[in-house]
Length: 308
Ligand SMILES: *[C@@H]1O[C@H](CO)[C@@H](O)[C@H](O)[C@H]1NC(C)=O
Ligand SMILES: *[C@@H]1O[C@H](CO)[C@@H](O)[C@H](O)[C@H]1NC(C)=O
Ligand SMILES: [Zn+2]
Image (tube, rainbow, N blue to C red):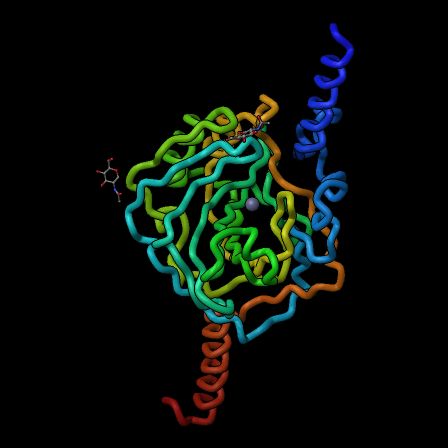
């Protein structure tokens, strides 16, 4: 082979190497991609002080009564949504008609896409952990603040992106609406392929806002490069269910851009670096406090003969 051809082939291979990041699970491609420990070498924000995901230590969480519920807009609309294998995960594109306000976020946010983080072969795969426990799977719904048009525009605003996160817990019964999601993943096995899920409603997957009073809030980042530190994170206390059958199936559908099975797609948890995690004061907890006072009062009043 001509030396200059050899050299240019080598250079293009090298530049391809430095251009790609990967998850720890793609270990056999150590030589050609950067695993999470090395992301910061190419994407400086990944080494920042407000990174995600994190481990939430529940006894250190600050309860904050200024974290109201959300208003979800368009969550019950019937949509045709496009699913695409992005090489690192599969994205489910959402139209601009899906929005949210409230939740103590500074403005109105429109949905861009949702995606899942999973493990494989029985291993849990959530990104956030609670008191060190990793959950089966995690759903992220990505919203961009108005009037930004893209992640690049929102990047310079600490709350430019609102990410809603739900943890999944394994149950014996199937989640009634996840099979459509699994089937769609089976139609986008390779990087770049896409499909449509007809008649999809976000409300089939997640509860309505009125049932989601209790959540954790902290400021963080995107969990994939460039790890933009522009995210107001909301992790709901209520978990979603998925059966072990569905969990096994979901991790078998797609392949990474390297051709390997797309498994263990989560970033390791990052240091808090002095940040505080807040928890909303759940109305359910408030109700139980009121009920507790009421029962104390009735006992007092009852024993003094005021309630017969
Ligand atoms: C979804 O696609 C079907 C078939 O292409 C079409 O008839 C329907 O109007 C679409 N629905 C929406 C909400 O776009
Ligand atoms: C994955 O597919 C996208 C297009 O959808 C392409 O831009 C990208 O280069 C592909 N990645 C690899 C490593 O092939
Ligand atoms: Zn994510």
